[in-house]
Length: 119
Image: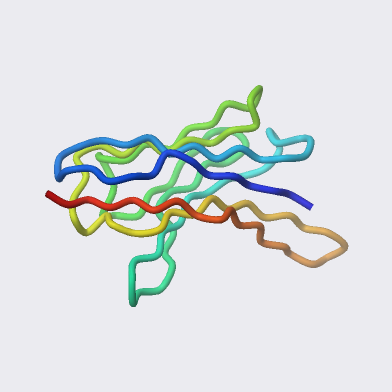
């Protein structure tokens, strides 16, 4: 069982910045990939960024050059630095990780943190 707790969301003006954090419970955090997803009202949840155990990263096209995912294995924490925010970035942001147990893939999600970009 893995528990994920996000923080750092809020209201920000267009062009502003926020940093989201996600703290994971459990051991061997460094072994696993982590990801940030988001879900806007009326839309499907989408992957925003992922980071592997070796810190390789992947971003969805719409955030490339503006968002940066990183991890601190000593703190069991993954971050999402969001710069040059746009109104279309408004969504609930979720932290995610996956575990394979006995041949079954389990998805773990945090409770989500609201990001609102508005003037």
